[in-house]
Length: 134
Image (cartoon, rainbow, N blue to C red; front, side, top):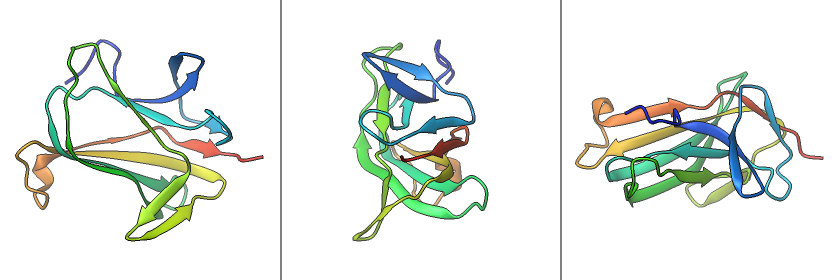
């Protein structure tokens, strides 16, 4: 459902505030200069997943996040800030994603959804952004 702020967003934290970022945003992955996805959850979710994909080749860099039984926002103007530190996982293996251009793919399985039914998932792709570590 659309929100007053137009979530979800690709965002940057600056001081106590988040700012919506457009395609082409650059993150150094130093300190708080990391990408955030801001999203409102009107209902509880069975699963929330965030995958990292190379924006040029389409290659998956695995999962940045997977949470089960995720709660909902307590207010209509509330949101969750999901951060990504540049590391992904596949099984028990961790990967440091190299400098390059990426998209974060957020997938949310509805509360009573069937994991294998594509109609039970809601999806959103972030604008492409660049990791440029010093």
